[in-house]
Image 1 (spheres, rainbow, N blue to C red):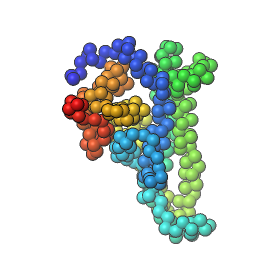
Image 2: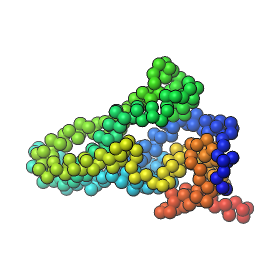
Image 3: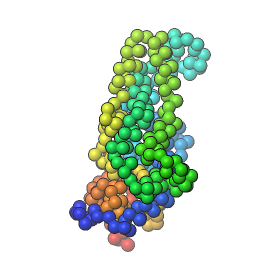
Image 4: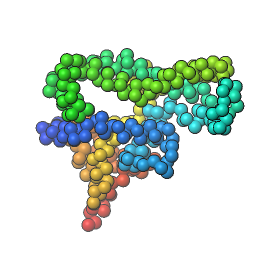
Amino acid sequence: MPQTDSFLSPSLSDKQAVKEIFYTMPLLERGKPLMSELLWVLQECPHLEAHIKVLPDYCYNIFDVFKKTYFKGFPLLSETVIVSDQAGLKLAKTVAEAKSVVTVNWRNLGRMFGIVARCIRFAELESEAELKAEGFGDLTPDKTGEMLTIIFGAKWVEANNSLIANGSLEKLFSDKLIEFVASSVGGLQDIATNLECIAYHWSPSAMVELNDGFTEGFNSFLNLDGQLAGESPRAGIYSFLLLAWPEIKKMLESDPKKTVPDLHEWMKPFMRVGVCAYVSIENLRDVCEPPPRGIGLSLRPLKVRSSK
């Protein structure tokens, strides 16, 4: 189907359909399992056999793509700290004793903490101005209420009516981002301070490598303008398909299983409203192909439906 102005003009029913989807499950609720499973993938899938995957398989294939794009600067833990003797490490009381049982890639550690520092700085010092530049403060009270309900849910909005009415939307979002970053990586700041002390006693080269790595990491995830670095050309569609995981999960589990045309038809209101950029059905088929060409969103081929 060609992209046309009429196709991209949303109707009231489009807006209502999109609103109902996110009112039923707000973005914060959708994002919690995505974040926890992404972190599991970035940690190289520890305890793989015991781990219960809570998301459809295609989500993990998208995470694998993100590891090579957004998160390509994140060092692998297995390549950063190698312990040859766990018992010896527990008994070590000095840096010299630790060095005999641990191999440390100080540049990798520096990169890791450079990324963390950049995220914390953006949340604390840059996010509020960024939101103002995007025009968040110009929304009407009704639009503000709709956006907050879509993101946090109706119960949160009801419980925080006074906060919403008496504060700026930009400050509210900035505070929530700071809270999220602090809960996710804030504790690493103390570890970073301890690492500087350990590197100081480890060797001169450890100090040089730690600081060089910090500089490399500082703009490898968020650049100096606060934008994500290493973005995939399909990043927009991937992000939407991740957020739509509850609905797509139902499509994958339906009997008979839905097809790519079914998914494309379901996505049209989101495209028209602007939640998702326009994607043709041909491009969507390419996206759904098995890896490495696509993300392995294994919907039923149309020809199976035609043969029944």
